[in-house]
Image: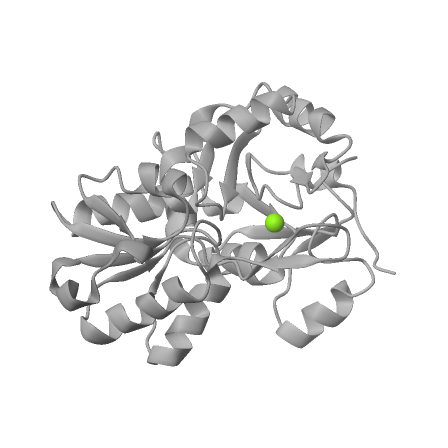
Length: 282
Ligand SMILES: [Mg+2]
């Protein structure tokens, strides 16, 4: 068993905390017990908060509504930073009045592709007119046929070189206590390996989300990286990303990483959190 510390005693030493969402605030059952009290603690202490989530399937506003419904009513929309927001921002800057093909649901496409571009689901791509597509986005693991639409994607990207964006690099997500499902990152990785190419990835551990959160927090120049604690349940995304960006990191054992295998995983990956807590509760 791991020797864990109290989250409150660690968080109390920082001016700001960046929290991952899934496995930290909530899990497949809903809000993790006691999280409401932790958010109250953070507010009472005047600690600034940002939520950094690798979720491209829901907009910032939809995520905000989920937290409201779960009872985390003090969370503000602008405190939530999603990998989808960053993908959308990138498309706004890089593709103008273009046609963007995607794998994902229509609702995910509707907000990410609100970038002044026209969106085309992979199933509607006409490979004979591949020239008409300007960029491709891996948005979500749902909303398409895993056989025909992934084949279309591979063939499209073989015919025409274009920017390819992965709006969420996560490979798996938990669907129950023991089981996982393949996430967008797995589909993108399959296509990357087939084509022997590297796409543009958004979301932790890539630095854009940390940079965005830091710039947003630090508009008045009051914060140093030393003042910020990154908290997450996944070594490869939250802890690696936080470490690379130069933040102190806390691994929590309430999600992806269990107390049973935390030591082994840390040793095997070399991704070392500064602190380990059972959860953000207490
Ligand atoms: Mg997580």
